Image (cartoon, rainbow, N blue to C red; front, side, top):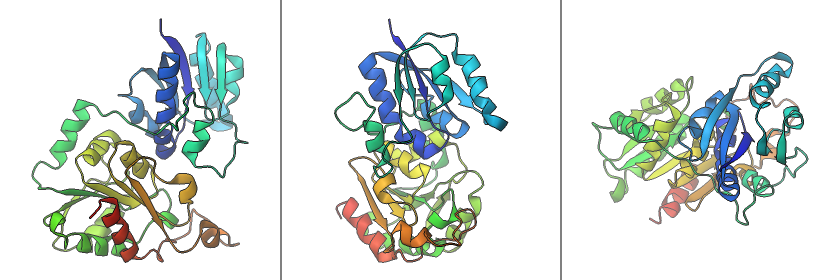
Length: 315
């Protein structure tokens, strides 16, 4: 009989994607079926995941009452394993034979995958991987059915403005890419989350006579399926960057105020480029506020990104 695993995961997309390797490792090593606790944005990541039998969506409430609601759902089950990535209080008030906890005291100087490796039963680092349903693949193909490849995915958005490479630099990169013989006639696909549509429109307006399909705001897993149909993903540090890497698509991440040593995309076909300035040089100023700051990515040169693009694809 399969063991029962309770996996208390993340609310953000990127963190959820990075946890998928650990989840697969736990399910395989303990021969377990998993119940996932995660935020709304992360739910689609786990729907087609092998061994995931139930997903409990975490809806935040005042005074952390959401954890009380979660506890009411999971308290009646005698869990074989509980893995908690959030250091939540509820794990001490449920029945569990084994508790695996990612402590907040764990070194914050390690890459997020290396941190998860410390609680993984495998010797090798738990590389993220996602499973895409046939329905999501069909939907993805419907988005691009009237276009021609090759396809290059561009992720021009991020969850705060300081991490966003300027639209004019993305547009210049697109113009350079189509000068290469392999990418003549390329269709560029823009991806991003709901509410980020204006960024895509700006890139489009600056990219005259270039084939662009703007999919910003489309569902997460059909977007993941788009990655698998494409030559490469190039984009800012974001959840979609990590998702692209998890599909096995060659992924080039652009970094500035966030630390690529901690958040670089994980996988065999991944690279990063960053601004000449370190994150501390960009952000360690008295007036900095990530909620109000404009882009801190202006010093990342288009030529640097172009060279990394060519190197990643061995061109």
